[in-house]
Length: 516
Image 1 (tube, rainbow, N blue to C red):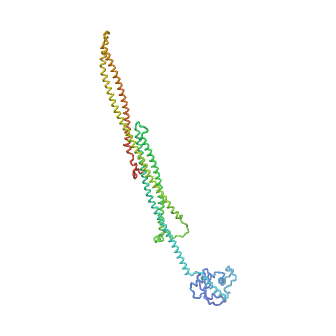
Image 2 (cartoon, one colour):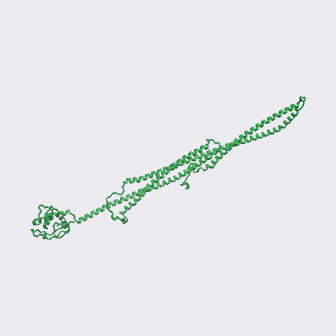
């Protein structure tokens, strides 16, 4: 504070050449630039602190050119042989100090003392300066502590918010994982249902292939109609199952995307929790202060902006809330898909099983009809066989009768030949000839009648043979068709998937053999 004391000037040095001795003790202050300070009058009782303040105030007054003290510098310069021209100054009305009277000099010192006393209040005491400095430091420390505590509270609150939202995200991730696992399980079931439906379609195609072996069956056959309807139904079911398969695959992708967003948000929040927790612990835990980096001593206070864009709290919440809402929507849609899938697959299984039951019932009816027709044909064939046996017996009897009738006719004809050689006179009134002629006529008519009956019997036998052949052919057709239907019913239809029931698809987890 103030100028430093360079040397002490003796009393004769202060006296003017015309003033004589001076009774006051003075001290002269010389500034670092070599300028002589204002003489300060000391009474010997003033403390060094007060004296130093007066010296400082006097130096400030001395440097002013518009005060009487300013002429001391000019007088000192003139006494050393310097002129106004040498100083480069034009001082109006200024006299050398050697030309001032002693009374005027005393008045000047008195005035200077008053000026110094007035200026003491403008300069603080070093103790006061120290006290104010300590107060300023304390206030700065308190303010820094308050701001640091506020920052710590904000960090703690931030950590709480991050932990809260992290817990919400974790809970949502667990729910999403459970729903996604259910969706994955039903996705595997859908694939199983698709495989089972494919097996049902193969069974239907095999039935249609075997039905082509039938003979002389009407195009409007009930079994063919039932199989065609079953094929259309299975095709529609496969189409719907494929659509569900695509919907579930797309939903699984949406769930995976929502999961990735939540995982990314959760990871960022966990990292932020770790960093903010460490930042909050720096002010309260000493072990974090001991961890100094290699350039921790070279830190500089710079007025720079944040390295990242600082989002608003609402925007931060909306970002996390948007991820949570998207995940919740995905879970809701997954549950709806699962519920609709369960209902639809149950309905599809019921429809396919009902069609399968209709096909089996139609096959049974067809087999029953064919069996009845076969039995009827068999009975007719048995009757024809009997008729054929009767016809054969009649033909045999006629043949025997013809053989038997042939001998009497030969005898009569031989007699007739012998009697034709008689003389003419012997022909008159010949009753034997008349009897022979009647016998011949009778025998000839009998033979003609038997031959006619034989022809009729043979024709009837031929007709019976033809009818029996036709019945035999029909019977073979019936037996062929019955064999076909029995093969379909007893062998092919037994391969129809039993998982398709009226209660729905009886499927569990997908077998490993089907997983690809």
